[in-house]
Length: 381
Image (cartoon, rainbow, N blue to C red):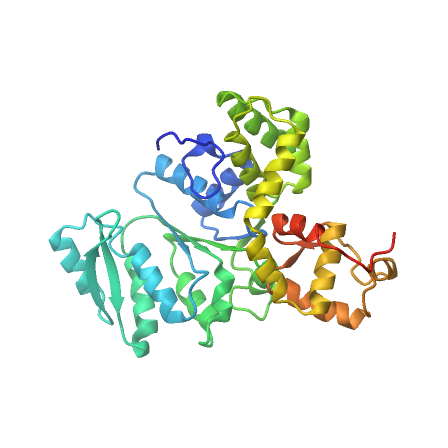
């Protein structure tokens, strides 16, 4: 992997030197997978799950060249057919040398569907497209799993936003997947998800098919000291002076939430000033919030009065441990507990708000800053 212009990556993975810490988590994940334990990886969105998975796969490929690693994000899938199509495109043909003879053999392996190989528009590498009848969906899914198991390789598959399968209209998808996965000793899985309450229910309830089938891992913030050393070192390499005090301010402003810290560092790295200070940091935040204002206004405009009032109150407090406390209700002129609970349920389900260890908070930390600028007539001093 080559060098990048800005070391504070916010979307892609460019190798371990641009990846901050997570040493213990990386080692733990690799050890679990190598020893036959599938893993459920949970955290709020943008805490760094995808980066961690890519770092794990980078090390597996380095240390075990014959292994095959696959990552798929199923957030956009809406049904089992979508899942099967994406699953097939992710793995089929990626375990072989893709000669004409091999492609013919792969096509012959799949009896329930028609495989069409066409070059990827970006890489030129042949990519499989599945053509199957809905009545053959389960058979096609089983053939994909069989294809992996009979490949002769150790396969590692990360399925991100795994809780999405609970939204599929088909019944029994969890049980169907579990029935195949439990018989694949050479295929190892990371089930990753950001809706922690759904993931916890899927893997923690005795009534669900995946009950106690994985090792659970909750991804938390990168320790302040480790992140500070990483940030200061890369700023110095780019000719920037970032003090430990300023980094602590950035870290604490976003409560250690990885992506938001990384995004701010990315913006600070491009500043012309060699010495970074609080004024530059605050201006950077203002610019970020201003650039997102139209989207925040749109999202805010979709809320009822009760929902928007509660959201603004949570934003002003930053964290609300006791959402129905009389002090909180009186301070912000909120309605009764039933009204608050109904609004909170909607805000959590739509990911305006999530419950952190410290209490309920706004999910998008930049939106939180924007909400704090809105007037709040009902607040008591």
